[in-house]
Image 1 (cartoon, helix red, strand yellow):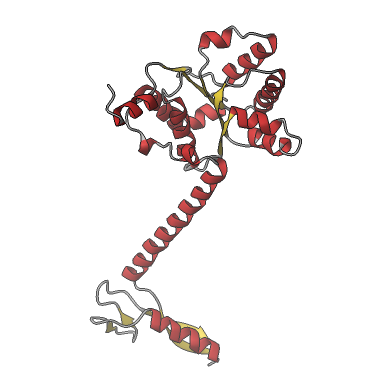
Image 2 (cartoon, one colour):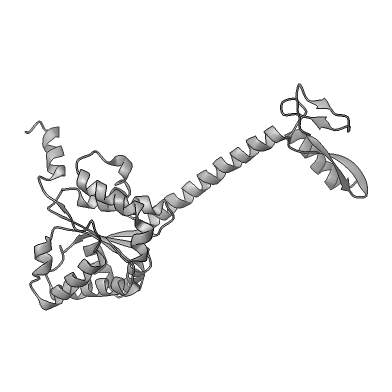
Length: 275
């Protein structure tokens, strides 16, 4: 027998040894004393009939479960890497349904509904808008959507509006930024509307919205603009931008209006004993 084959057979024996309770059956092969299935088989190797060690039924089941665990861990690592690539900011990645403290139930309910129905919403190009003042939980809810969908193998990018405006307005980063806007299944733009203070910003915002609009894929935004603000834009150019944005964010749950005190301010006050 060839040395290489002998080494392989020996390694198979070492990795699957005969244990207490195992026995030799009528066919001359070792059987597992637990599941009573063969631990060996006959195999033709190099013109010889050899006994080759194999997995019994219970060992095969254990090996299959171990392989599943390894595959799940590898897939989790892949999705973690995808999440870091899609959501560069750590605070956005930490905004998950598991981290919800119950302070903005309406927003979280809408976010969960959006994730659960995303395949149909994606097919119909329906996004979602979270509208409210600073600290009311709109960014948290939008990022919950992004994080949850990434772990269902969807590509979702989360970007600040001002970051997109800066990158689209820079010759060196424009191409990559426009790809980030067009490529994902869902684009989340945080702080939409906090950027209308110059003609340049308005022009870049127009390019961002037009680029996303042309893909026929949905958009989720967070904004401190009210529905009334969006209907009564201060200029024709902004009116056009807002109109397209609202169209992309249109679904039965949109807009999600968040009112009340700032959650962040309330938490800070509680830490300092302020009522």
